[in-house]
Amino acid sequence: MASITPISRDQFNFIAQICVPLNIISLISSIASCMTFGFIRIYYPNLADRVSFRLSFAALFCDIGYSVHILILLGLDVGIGFSCIYTVWGVVFFGLTSLFFIVCIALVCIMILFYCSLHMYFICLSFFDFRIFI
Image (cartoon, rainbow, N blue to C red; front, side, top):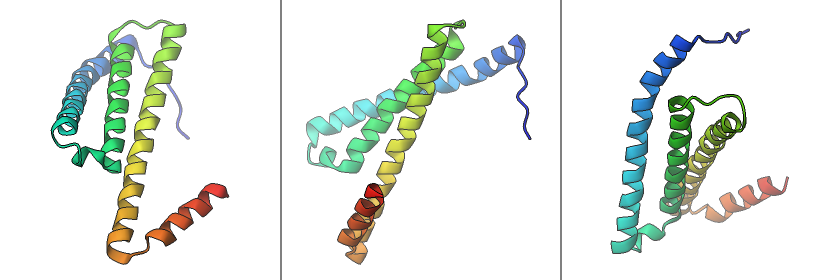
């Protein structure tokens, strides 16, 4: 059974020194990807109208929120109180929401695969409707 041991201030500073640059890189790449989405939406609106493309934009937005909340949590001295609760909530919410959108993209791609190659789109859709109502 795993035990939770508190970390020292030096260990936290070491973790923050490693994670902050990586989160800055993640934030910059997510913002650049959102800008690319915007340019594709302006110049090629037919390509940006796909469901998986819109879901990936939502996942990028959640990645931006996750990176910002991690940077707030690691970069600022967040004491015990509302700011600590809010940043931890933001990290959990945006992390799980991003995962939800990635799973939705995978389900859309699976349904497209069934529709294009096996022509079982309606069977697959009725299966998912059945699972929702259970």
